[in-house]
Image (tube, rainbow over the protein chains, first blue to last red):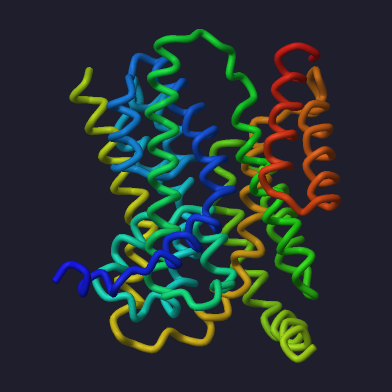
Length: 241
Length: 107
């Protein structure tokens, strides 16, 4: 029964997913540990980090939550979380087509669709002879599990050791940068890549560090809409070439 | 205090979940997703990575010491090493270690 429901998982499904997730898992364990240490420093132990990884499961929101859990207002915390997490709206929308046939499993896939899982599963590079549904499930699961594992380990470590983790958040920046370069090298039309940086940078300068995300997203969507014909034409060349 | 903490965590969790589930509830009900939405799904990821990188630098100041030098050097290391080896772990690890050494011991 259970095996049937899980669409007969093969060893290859799991090992392929593991290979895809490996670089993310390493990053997540390191980043998660940074988060766990930070939580511990604020008086929230490994169990809190574990809960946070289940309830929120978004690195940026979780890092942000550390100070808010201690003292912030609930409404402000909700709005800020929504703003920081708003990018997931685009991730989920662009996965609707792909996840259409995933059945009940898709609710887990959407709930746990973080930046890195999205980056891996939206590339559509599915290993040969692999059940795509199982592959997606395990990539998503490995990513979330490693993040939570890292944060719990970090919480335990923070209790025992006393090491300076200042600067560990740069690993997030570095990861996004490598994905950005990869996307750049794989596409002929660089308008979206340039737009993302320029619009956000402009809004950061105009609106300040707390309010820039939403205006940046509005500008991005507006420009993408206005330039749709041009971008699709260039994108089309790429498909044909 | 603990009760407040769990409520704030839940509130932030629900807000995060909403960004992931609401689009599916709106567009995923067996209906055909409009071409425009499909177009956005195709190109937005390319803008989103740029947005996230800028977001990572949101608290950076160029005018005050150390004038974003650790970030600049860290980024050069990440970009150069990635173009050289195309290895994500390598670039992330050496970039992060270099950055941590810079902010903790040099700048």
